[in-house]
Length: 160
Image (cartoon, rainbow, N blue to C red):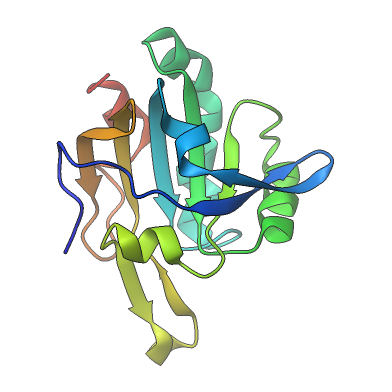
């Protein structure tokens, strides 16, 4: 069942990519007492994710933070080393936290997984964006398969 507006981000530990390597972090650390923009992509280094989705959030990061977000998180069902390499490739710097949901634990707990096993890609995340305030979802936009509209940085900014 897909997470809904008003529900809390599930509690669990994941890995983030940092300049010093992977670091374990809890969803509580990421979301408690903060307004957070979380967007998820099917995979690092994939075409739309690398050409449009992540670059849009990098480009608009300052504007998103100026509109009241405390942080921006990019999540993918990839390991923290891949997320770190992708961040470096995309010039993310410290603007966006790169959250590695390597086993799709958080993705599945939120009901936002995408089964791409038949295409050789395993279980991934649907393309989506959400805004959470103190761990509670206040906005959720999930793209239809192949879509790239409602989860774009520009669309999310309209809801901050």
